[in-house]
Structure formats: C-alpha cells, structure tokens
Image 1: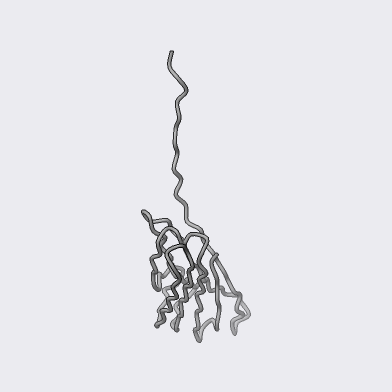
Image 2: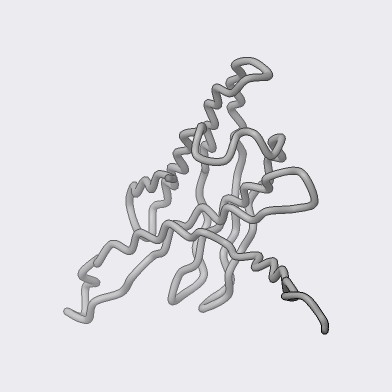
Length: 125
C-alpha cells in the first residue's frame, strides 16, 4: 500500500505598484502617465524595475531610490537620469537587484518629471 504523496507547487509572481495621474491637455482631453515599480523574484534575488508609460511621446528625468534593511545589512541606492517615452509602451528606466532576504524589507520610490506630464511618484511596497 502506497503512502500519502506530497506535491510541491512553486508560484512566482511579480508585485506591481502602479500609479497613474490624469493630466488635462489644452484640447480638454485627459491623458495619463504611468509610474510603476515591478518587484520580480529572480532566483534567490529580488529584481526591482523602474517603469514609465505614457499615452504619447515624452521626455524628462527620473530618480529611483531604494532603501533596504535585512539580516545581511542596510543599503541605500539612488539612480537618476533622463528618459524618453514612446506612446503606449512600457519603458524600463533602470533596474536594481537585491538579495532575496530583502523581500518585504525594502522601500522604493520612483519619481518622474517631464514637461509633458509634470511630476509623479510611486512607491513599493
């Protein structure tokens, strides 16, 4: 007689923090710019992607700040630069890799500043 069997299922998921801001254009229509921080488990690491998307082309500057505190220590990372958005397409601005122990023990903020859409920030988690 066979004993009970155990099935282990591993589910990998990405946690997304999405912020959209409505901006009224000169024609009275509403346009949105999106700010996203994707947290993606990656082997024994955690990959944070700073993502922007807009309904029309735009240019500007970004700042991505990541603070983490875990059993391996504390770190703070700040990255900044210029961006160029294509209409309706996600644009990964930069990526930060943390050790897996940082899951739930980090704070990330992405700030976008463009003439077309103004200033917007999003945070994760």
